[in-house]
Length: 637
Image 1 (cartoon, rainbow, N blue to C red):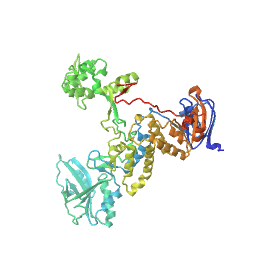
Image 2: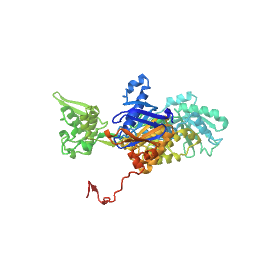
Image 3: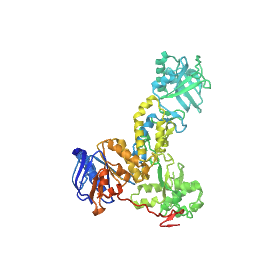
Image 4: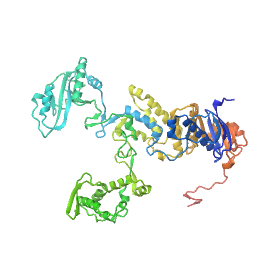
């Protein structure tokens, strides 16, 4: 006989229609609760076992923690022993946060964020060139990688495209001990720099050192790099008289920027030196559309905007603006608002009494979207004359959006929403992330591009990653977790989903299996899992993969209870509990419990009758002919 610690024992369960049910369930096994609908399966599984497991867990917490969670009622049962912490995975078609995606629910997105933050290469959004920051030691090693004996010049860029004569600047540089500078492409002694044109933009770099590359010059090179980075605000230029692969032994007094010279622009900052743009080094938070660090600020990381649609705002274009052609303006335009709109009309050049359909597009845009930064002179007429004042005009849509945001009453918000539509965010184009995050690439792909692939496509990408030994050590654990969680999604038949698929668009069966995959990835042991028909929406050919996943949960040391009608699940279960004999008041009892063979041999069990083929559902001898046209009700059209 099994020890009680290997069993879950239920005595006197009376929740809902349960008729004083007694049950003994083996732990660490796959258990199937089956029977006719309404016979009490879910009442025992969810409303008794799961409810009591949750209640006991909350009672084990501190008094301080319980005040935030509240008290759960005790289910109507005499005793339950051997109960483990319980997790219920039910079917839900709603309740997901609109920000949630398949990737965030399964935590795959979190691991991909780490992967791109550590191994991805930042590219400039403007010129699309790679960006990287280097330490002082890395810069020194990069310079020393040149051929031995190469002549080089270390310059510090201090002026970039600025107008002026810079007389005081050159005087300060001389006092600091610097002798030469490159001014607009020519290296000259600072004392001999000619007068610069005040209204012309100039580039000035200070010559920090000139040396010949040898191993013994490393200390001097390191000191020069330090000085150049300090003077050039984190940036330096290495000037080679010719291609560094073919160094010249000469060291001319004056070098002009031309095709025979080669420059290395090196920076200790994370910045694009070509476009003069600085960036923050990539972090995992930068790839999160739930964080202000990474989200598109225009759509708050949602990828879409709920905005007023011009076509919906004007249902009757035969009306003029003053006749409330823009319908949600609702109330008659008063004197104060009218003088503002008249100022816009004078500025753009149109008549407010013109029917909307006859207004030029520039007039419509000005009224709806505003006039930007253009200064408008408004005229307010009163008894004392005309008072003129100036300002900008934000547009009617901005006024309506302000009213919509301030509205608290549901009917008011519903009224405005009649004139609104969801549209793709124009800034991030639906990718949800900010500009910098969308330009970090790993082996040619950005994170949004990778997450738009289906599960096999993401797995194939991870398998083809070409990593250096250092990167392999960095990414080893991350790649292991990613492959495991992606494989779990494959095993539960969700291979066709993309990681960026919004959670609210998932069906009940899909959302349940995604939660199941995330639970498998957690690796918990000693837990009671209760699932509600996980085979819903799953093709029969994929059912065995789902059962393998449930079996994997059991192998980890968990107990899995499945409320199910699926025959394949019953035949794969270690223990079957058949409820009945009928629904409602005619049910609520356990008709049979045991292994598959025991259930098949129990003649009181309706489930056993069908599993043993004592009863079958006959195939009709005559079927309705298949129509080639659409079927409407019971007749063909």
